[in-house]
Amino acid sequence: MTLDETDRHLLRAVQEDAQLTAQELGERLNLSASQAGRRRQRLEQAGIIRGARAVIAPEGVGLVVQAFVQVQMATHDPAQVRAFTRTIDLSPEIVSAWTLTGEADFLLRVYCADLAALHRLVHEVILPIPAVARVQSQIVMDQQKPDAPLPT
Amino acid sequence: MTLDETDRHLLRAVQEDAQLTAQELGERLNLSASQAGRRRQRLEQAGIIRGARAVIAPEGVGLVVQAFVQVQMATHDPAQVRAFTRTIDLSPEIVSAWTLTGEADFLLRVYCADLAALHRLVHEVILPIPAVARVQSQIVMDQQKPDAPLPT
DNA sequence: GGTGAAATCTACCTAGG
DNA sequence: CCTAGGTAGATTTCACC
Image 1 (tube, rainbow over the protein chains, first blue to last red):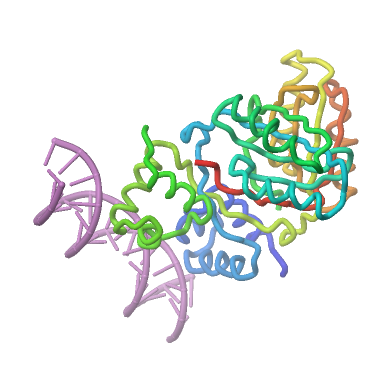
Image 2 (cartoon, rainbow over the protein chains, first blue to last red; image 1 turned 45 degrees about the vertical axis):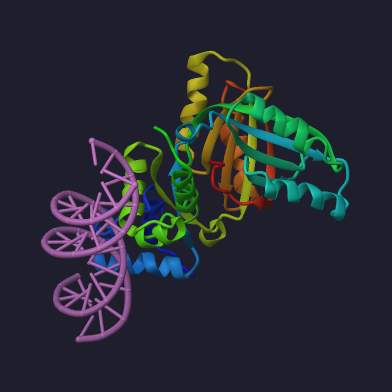
């Protein structure tokens, strides 16, 4: 699918606010409401706009500790790694997990109620998994740039 | 503000899909549409629901390389660091940036069109900044757990 | 690009604990 | 008195022109 400059502008707009009406979107793009709505719908059907997520204030729900946890595996044996990815799936504090190139095999993004909860997650949940060799957690002190739109 | 179990259930639901109608939300929560809408509105006004963002498929807009870039600073002098944070703000490929405890001072999340673009960002944009001492970038191979709702 | 029917939101109202 | 459910007018969407 080919995107023109107006499409890219639309994608930036809905990433900042998914609740814009077709009317408001049209004003930003210098389009009529019907054209703006039509373009948005086309991008949804093409799978480029995947959906919309509400943004929650973590402090509002008592999650004051954010951290990134790097995990190095002792083995790459699929059966062993599977026990680890299962734990990822089942731990609600782990909201995102990526496999990375380089020395750290996994990067986890976690939200906890307090430092003790983070400590428990690392030492009682992640480290005891046989496939895990080493864990390093870094606490987020400040978010300098908060989730900007993708560079389209 | 105090949240009951229904509020937490609502927050999980709108994080998965912010476009749910009050009707649909009510069905999931065993509430009438009017009550579901009222609760959502209350959580918005309390600032717990901050808004909604569209989720874009990165590949759909030609961004096939995702990476995390760790940056260690040579100095903590505010004026020097400022030049770095300004670059963060001005670089569209850098979508998120956090300051962390531990050896790496900043963690950047970046999206690029290709490996060459990532290489240029690191070597021609970030590394030349005087305040920057060391940069290590790790490319995302796979997203194991994709942005789950916050554990509420 | 515009229009109208259908659906949605939201402010207001009523009932029950 | 406070919370839940229902209703009607205004707003938004979307298929069609």
